[in-house]
Image (cartoon, rainbow, N blue to C red; front, top):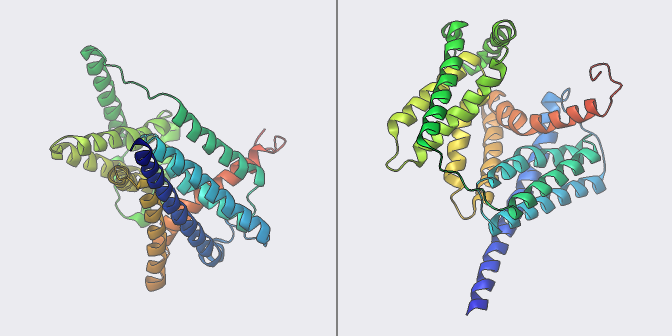
Length: 320
């Protein structure tokens, strides 16, 4: 009976890995189609397209498939919260990077180094024992909460002091004007705000959001407070990612509890790309596909290529 149970368990893991692999290949193929027919056609100056060849294209698919098999096999054997970082990095950076390797000029060394890095990270998180959270003294807890609220007060206080209410904007088409004014204020009056503002939006507020969602009975007052705080920091800074972060965090929180979370997250990314392009075909409005196809998936991978190109040339004047 014990052997039968083990076989059933292994089979269920195998099925999950196969489903995640199929979803990853479908997502990768969709990115390739949109890269050639949308990204290169409209943003050709930012994203090149080269006739690399069938062998390199096939190689890029094999790498994407091999990585998702490694990640899914590891996570389904030992489910852990840190796995979401690996999955999101694979979806947002690695898969688009394989696409740009197979269709454009992404360097082979960069792709293999990134792939090796994500494999090492997956292995380390699987092999290392889980960390036990220490039960801190109540005074330390109060001190931490005091520091946290102090930093929050500094961030929002500084934003309001530098004309945050005057910059208040919820129009996504005007965010770059708000962002330009914010950059001038950071450089002239708040050198540390370049660090504290992203911490506030991505760490402090998202921690409050997850705490509210995870709290038994749901803490609706805290949830409302976090949403208002996130909307304010978006409106006063102009960073669209601050607006999208709560949706991403909430979605991942809900999906990660599923037994087939990896497959569902990849399918979600696939549907997001498809829906954005359908919207573009119907309305001819480039904002939505530019935000979700170009900015969310292809820009991070492209930045990896540009960073690699710069730091691989130590004699370059900007590097020096």
